[in-house]
Length: 473
Image (cartoon, rainbow, N blue to C red; front, side):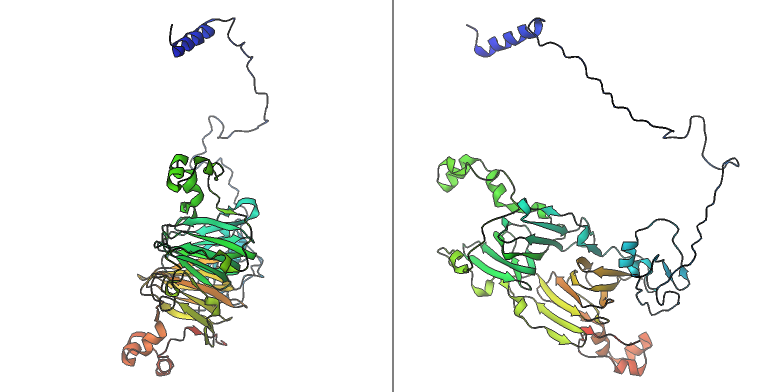
């Protein structure tokens, strides 16, 4: 008797060869939709529209712009380089004194009003400096399950100059989880609002758990598994990663670890029946709703033989409880390995700048600077050497990035406080103050180089002012 597969193959051939046994042919379906089009996509056949031809009509149109409205000070050839306020200007124009001209075509006035120093840059701008600003509002949002939260990110894909650090803005509703996960990059975080419970286990099996609220910080080193859960009314936070190419989509997830491992292997690994894994997720959970945790954190304080992570190695720092340095122009507080040693290569400053005041002219010799603007309107001019300088404008929710050793300032050009987070990829938060440098340099050298008066040199401070207050002129 022929083997079963051979019999099935012979039967299939007989069915295909017999018209009486084959399925009846269906009549073809003809599309009937018709669009009414007129004209030609290309020039009519035989028509030549290339080059000059006196037969062509030549309408010039009227592109003259009348009744040009300028912002205060915009008509002046003023070398001071003040920023202009275009908020109440109907049609802002790229004009500064005798330079520039008017628009004669469509444009995005909303963006132009938000970036006055890009539209009408100060005369001190020169040459080419790469883009150093990214609004988080332009970042594509990744949405969690069942309205549990979302995230959006900035990395080198959208801000190519940001090679050393990147940021992820994340929201978790009350009880929602950022699922158990780990990264190839270190994760530094500032709590922007609300409260969260964070948990982790290190390579020695020591456990960590803490509740953090607005203004607090955490850091999870590369490869350390952890989770985050929103408390009470939920939370929102800013994550800073020590890798400019970091992507949230490259996160290692516990859900995918189980989904992409054979169940036979899972059963063997955990020494349970294979049926124990019948209901595991089929893939990424990302952000999802959960049961709100007990208010008593001790109820979730799980420990093993290795115990808990000692305080000196704590993954959290209650920065909200640290009092800032107060200056005439605002406040500053710093966190680095002096007080938070686990973040071995991340340091930061939280700076508040009053209206008209300015984070002094400085640069960072050890690291690029990653910024996030929590409130207010500011501008930064960046000098990049080789005669290159450019001024950028920032609003609440924007990311800024300044490469190492490029001198810059942060000026409050609005009428409310600017609050900005400055992050360095460095164990210590350090900078060089231009004012202090000149004050500690022999006056003859400074005077013969910059042609400053004796009074100006005497006015320099041998201490870092950090934030200088605004002037009346």
